[in-house]
Amino acid sequence: MKVGYSRKVMELFMHPKNAGKLEDANVTALTGSVACGDMIKLYLKINPETEIIEDISFESYGCAANIATSSMITEMIKGKSVEEARKIVFQDVIENLGGLPKIKFHCAVLAIAGLRIALEKWDYLKGRRKMDERFVKNLLKGILDPHTDKDLITSGVVKNIEIGESNVAIHLNVKNDEFFDEIVSNIGEVFEKLPMVVEIYIGGEKVAV
Image (cartoon, rainbow, N blue to C red; front, side):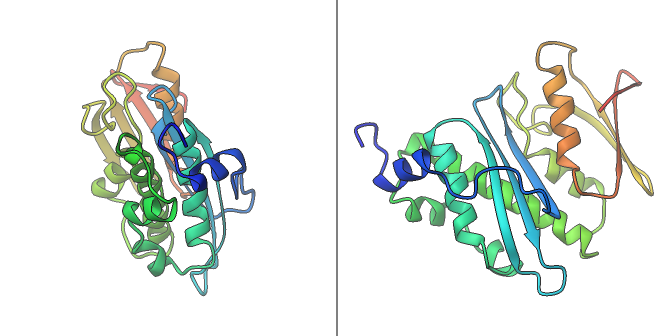
């Protein structure tokens, strides 16, 4: 309480709900960066016929607010339809937590960004949207560049995107430094559960994902 966290935040930090990997999830989303301080991975199990979110869990790296917001969003959307989940905004998460210090609002924004990405991937799986450059950029915008704390698109890390019938080629403008493996790994996870082969190139050379 002395650090500005509500009782609900501290409760979910100490005893998070729906934490851990969901093995039978049919859509996932990754947002943030471990190197930048906060990362969230959401796992959703959505009924293909009713489009009800039957189960959801999360994995989180970061502060108490990051864990609490991740846990809260899973509680808020479990049992809801995809369309109902779309309407939830980060202010709703903050309100349900009994408030957050303004400096921690980004944790709620990150959790909502993860939800948006998961639902966008679901739309693709349901045939409601195409695998085009805009879609790929939206997925990559969830990941932060450790060098700048900006997303991979805004920071200029992603140089070019090429989309084939069953593959996506992503050309990067990034150094092979201490953050290299994390960036490549995160890009691979962004496309998890999607029926596409992801290829990453640096300087024209293909790297392992």
